[in-house]
Length: 65
Image 1 (tube, rainbow, N blue to C red):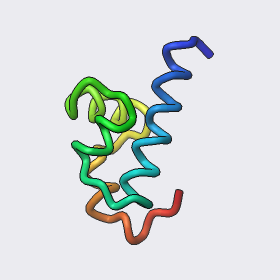
Image 2 (tube, helix red, strand yellow):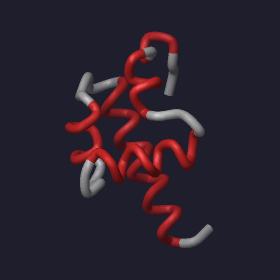
Image 3 (cartoon, rainbow, N blue to C red):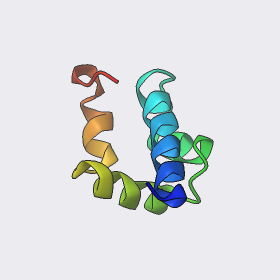
């Protein structure tokens, strides 16, 4: 795995944890995980999971991390 992909994956794990466990909104979770902005976070999230982060955020009661 290239280092860039690994870093994005680790940041994504932090952001998802913050969304689901720490009750942060998308913007706060993206910044806390080290993404430049929400657009950067959303683009990477959709590339990895095939859905936008708002889908997960709005349905977080049914998602387990």
